[in-house]
Image (cartoon, rainbow, N blue to C red; front, side, top):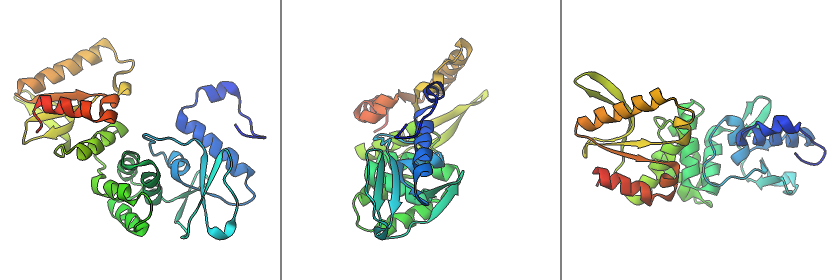
Length: 262
């Protein structure tokens, strides 16, 4: 993985991106002369927060100016004037979840920040109030505009990074804000819970993540079709979009417009 640190190739091959990043983190921490505090993508990986958009597989650390030291090929050291609050996760020191979210937003943008923020609040790692306080502490620093977007949009009802990304694009493109995780009923009873709902337009929105139907049986796909048929039978518009649609933004917006969202 890095000079002097090795991992079995077969074990490495089955790890996902987050698990590989955590392995790199442990390799760097093991080689450090003293305690180090993980930040940005590295803290997010250890905290279990999703990474959306720009990724940086280097290990990120924060340090006060007095500590010195330089970044290297696989390690980025961020010099900070303040001493961030630290949490301990599996023996690893990380910037606190709210600080981690704000740092990600400032470096990687609003989509990355909102996805991490939604997950952090949903998992109970932080609160919307703590995020707002952390944004205020960032003052007028670099990237604080994206951090303010995160504080305004965070919603723990978002259940996936794709839903978080979709909401960021909706806000950027001027689409009306939806209700999240709305339950739909018909005369036969409960139909299902939908990702997005625009009651004023009578439109349901569904983010179709690739994982959602990966390996799904014919019965699962058939039940999903029947569910959508029942929704449409209520006279509701249905818009569906993929990760690629949400990332580009305009294709998702076109689907929403076609379904009746104005």
